[in-house]
Image (cartoon, rainbow, N blue to C red; front, top):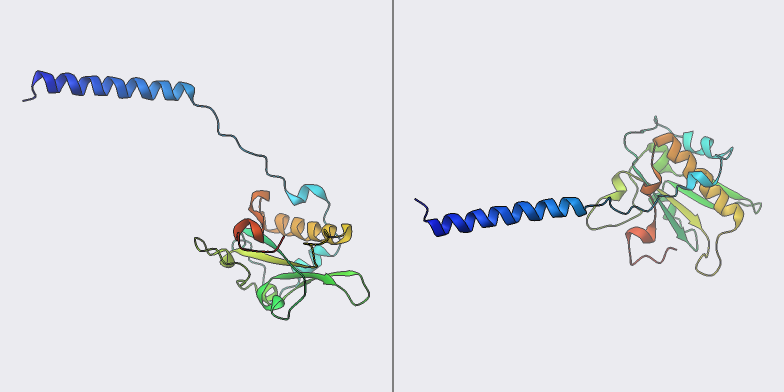
Length: 177
């Protein structure tokens, strides 16, 4: 049997833990959450974005795509179109062009980001914006085309704004702004 000293100690411990739990519950407040600002709120869907998203060789796979990751590279190496799903680059006439790559047309996994704790390539759409943005910010036209493409992807695949990332958000070693 329990001695009276052991019983008193356990009873005091139980009462103290219960009272402490009640005090903590009374002090509890809702967690602070910053409002996610979706790129979709900044613009309406552009006329060409829906066409670029819909141009695939296989049916779109809405259950697959959960995130959008935006990258920026100064030059357009040939490998970019093999690693990303979309590339936004200057066209031959000086205008901007948003193109779906072969990965997008096949609805295949990308090879655009490495995060040790999660495989973002399996369920993330990679968008590459070509330009030297560490020196100058994107032009209004570049930003508008990016916003239109992201918004179209968000509405097509029901991707919330808090699942749209910059490459530098996921990889601290990235120089992509």
